[in-house]
Image (cartoon, rainbow, N blue to C red):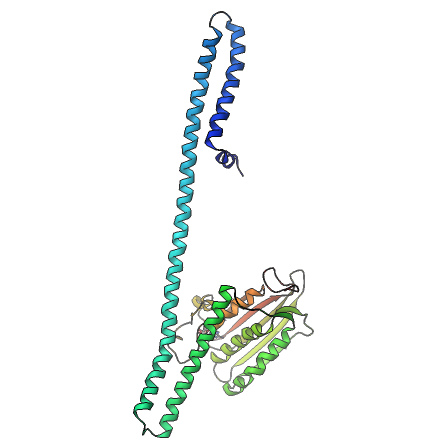
Length: 332
Ligand code: ADP
């Protein structure tokens, strides 16, 4: 803290009293010294009153000036803080309205389709079975999309509000990858995408929430399949980076469409889908990576993507071996 800060903390009344006491002391000393020199020329009382006038008055004026400067600086600081808070509130308000408009769009689109198709089925009872099956298929797809969207929104809201229930236990990353592949393995076969793995065993255990980490791996793998053409290749690597900040590093690469440089950081934001994917036929909520980032960061790790348009992408995430404070750890 510099001297000005220290001065600012002293109340103005203290300034006045300190000034008066100091000036009295100085006056007394000077009076004695000058009294010795001019004894007899000027009376001691006149000398004291003169010295008090000469020293106390400027000191009091200085104190008052300092007081007003202090008040003005304080006001300016408060004003800057208020302006900053106002800017933050405005940007939060904008984010909230953006979110509301995206959520309502994302909810309304499947609902409109479902409603229209159900009405059609109700009106045209004589519709051929084949056509009926097609409409019911679409209704099913849209209903699944709504269910997924609502589940993702709830997950994100719970994590952001800090009310998500985390179940942490000692884990091995190879188990997490295996569990994820068990649930989405058939997707690889259906899409004719090859999968290769390079897991450097044995890998040390770490503390984490298995279900949530499976969700992260599953989301990255599902995206790799979704955004890769048939005949593509997805490669998973997992390794241990030893040292004081020891961590597990998982990287999932694909040979898919890739991501434009201007989108690469944004795709971890809620509802951000790169290019024209929001309106394209590739299904998704735009929430998977936002949730994945929250989960990885909860574990004290980091997640990022590197990509080249048309050549593919690599999604990497890290998990520290020592649970971070506020995140999972042996005591939690
Ligand atoms: P969703 O896949 O449901 O749209 P995500 O949050 O998982 O939502 O992904 C956000 C966006 O990031 C995707 O819409 C897509 O534009 C881009 N993306 C994610 N993974 C890949 C990938 N492997 N290749 C190309 N683009 C990707």
